[in-house]
Length: 213
Image (tube, rainbow, N blue to C red; front, top):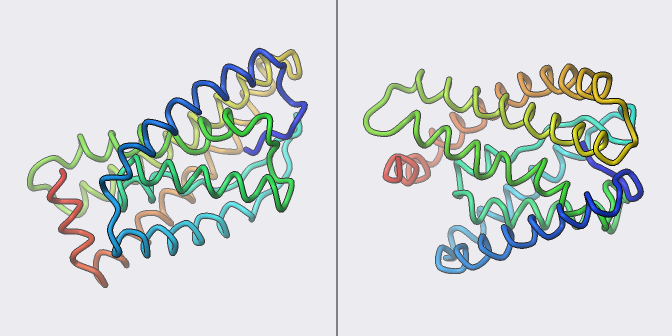
C-alpha cells in the first residue's frame, strides 16, 4: 500500500501532507501527556513488530504494494495518539532507509496506513466493546476493525491514484480492494491472536484497555 514518489499529482500529495501533518501534530501533543517508562518500552517493541510486518509486501499495479498494516493493533494497545506517532516513525524509516514509500507522499501514506486504523479502527473497537463484553464480541470487533481499516486504506490509495490521473478508477479500486480484502482477513486473525497472547501474558494491558472502554 506504500505510495512511491511521483505516484500522485502535486495537489493531491500536498493536500495529503498538510492533512497528515495537522493530525500528527495533534497526536504528538496529546501523546506527550501519555508517556511513561512502561509505554515507551511498549512503543519500541510494537513499533519494531509493525515495521517487520510491513516489510513483507508484494507489488501491485500503479506502483503501490500490498501488506499488513498493524495500525489497529497499535491503536488498541497504546491508544490512537501514541500509535499515530509510531506509524509515522515506521513509515519515515521505511522511506529513508529502504525506499519503501516516498518522502513527498509520506502524508498520504500516513493517512492510508496509519490514521485510518489508529483512529478509525480504535474508535470502532472502543464503541463496540464499551462496558462488560465477552471475549468473543471483543475479538469480532477487533477483526472487523482490521478488515475495514485495511480496505478503507486500500480504497483511499486507489482513489488518490485515480484523482492524480495515474490509474483508471474501476480497475484500481477492484485491484486494491480485492487484494486487500484477503490482507484484511489475515491481519484481523493475526491481530486477534496477538492481542489474546499479550493480554494473557500481561493482564495489566487488558485492564488498561477495559478501563478505557
